[in-house]
Image (tube, rainbow, N blue to C red; front, side, top):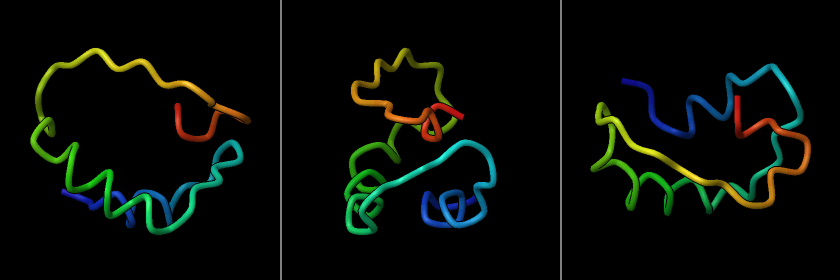
Length: 52
């Protein structure tokens, strides 16, 4: 399974602008949810790249 950094670096859709150090934090806290059905509400979507 791809890491969040790999997903971020290969993204080619809408503008996706994240500070690189966020990705390690996201990986740490959200990795327990991989492969599980969840509902996520994201605030501050800017150009929508992270929604893709």
